Image 1 (cartoon, rainbow, N blue to C red):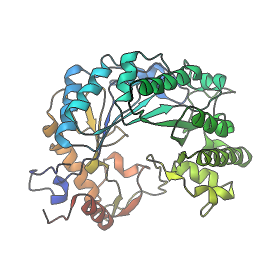
Image 2: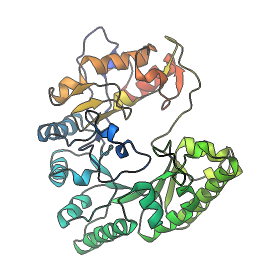
Image 3: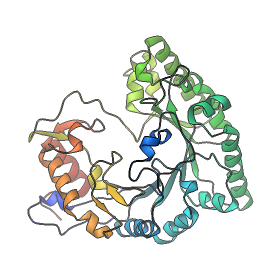
Image 4: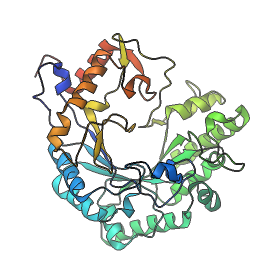
Amino acid sequence: MKTQEAVPVEYRPLVSKSNWVHLSVELTSKCNLRCVYCGKSKDSYNALPGHDEHMADAVSSRIVDLAQELEFNEVNFNGTGEISIFPGWTETIDDFKKRSRSKLYVVTNFAKSLSEEELDAFLKLDRIYISVDTSDRELLMHIRRKVDVRMITHNIARLRQKGILENRKVPWLRFNCVVSDLSGKRLHELAAFAVAVGVDEIEMFPMNGCLNDAEGYPRPPSSLDSERMREIAEQALQAKQLLEAHGKKLKVTEELKRLMGEVHPEWSSGGKALEGVEDSEEEIFKAPKLPEEGVETRLCLQPWRRLLAGADGRVYPCCRKAEVLGNLNEQTVQEVVSDTPLMELRQALLDGNLKGTICRACANAPIGTVEEMQSRIEELVGPENGQ
C-alpha cells in the first residue's frame, strides 16, 4: 500500500494520507436480470446518465492503472450491472492479474451459460459472490426474473469440473441472499443447497423495498408483523445451524440482526444465534439524529481506504455514489486522488463540517465526536503530525 502525500498546505495532514484497501469497479451498469427490488427493473432508472452503459475501454485501462499505482488489497467487480455481459471482461480480468497484486472478487448472478473462456476467467479470481435469494426455482424466477436456479447450479458444477480437470484451485464461493417475506420462509433450504453445491458462505441482507407493490410480490422484513418476522428469524437460525454443521459460515447485516432480535430471543443481544455469525461487510447503522456541527461527525473511513469507479468513468468514495471525486474519462489516477473534492470531503469528516454533503444524513456510518474520528484515522494512516 502507498501513502498519498503532497496536497495543498491548507488541508490538515491527515487529509493527505491514505491507506487504500478496497477498490470497487463497475465495468457495466447493464444487467441481464430485472430483480423486483432493484432499480434496473424500471425504465426510468435505466434512462438516467450512467445507469445503463458499459465502461469505455480507455477508462477500464485507467482502472487497472489505478489498482496498480495505489496497491489496493482487493478489487471487487460489482455494481448494478452484471460483469459477464461486459464485452471483453475476461481480458480485463487477465489485465488485472498481470498488472496488479490485488485480490480479485466478483459479484455475479451466474444466470447465463458460461463459455470455457469465461470459466477460465472465473477460476483466476479469489472470490465469487453469487446472487441467489432462494433455491426454489419458481420463487427465484418470480423475484429475480429471467434466471433459472438450474443454470446457476450448472455453472457452479462446470466451474468445479474445470478446476479439477486442470488441477486449479476453485475460488471461494458465497451466496448473496436478499431476505424478504418470501425468500425468508425457505432460508434453511438455501443453506442446504449451498452445502450441496460447495458454497463456502451465505451472506444475508434485508430487502429494503420492492418496486412492485402488487399482491404476491416480496415485502421487506421491516414491514412485517412480529409473527412473520419470527418465522424468518427461525429460518435464519436453522440455516446457521445447518451451515455450521458442514463447516460453512453465515454472515448477517446489523439491520437484519436487529429486526430478528426484536422478535426472537436467540437473535437478541447475547443470544446463541449470534455466536459464530460474522458481521456483514455491509453494516447498516440506525442514526436517529444528525451530527452536531463542529463537534460530531460520521465515523466513516471509506474516503481514506476505498474508491468506487462507475461504468461512466466517475469515481466515488463509497457505494452511495453521491459525492463525485473525479472522472477517469478526463483525469489521471493521481489527479483524481489528489484533487479538491476528495481532500474537502476528508477535511469535512475530520472537522465535523458536513453541511452540504451526503455524509451528514448517511445511515451507513455511526455518529461520533471529531476526536473519535481523528483517532480512527490515525489508527488507519498514522499520526497526524508524524511520518
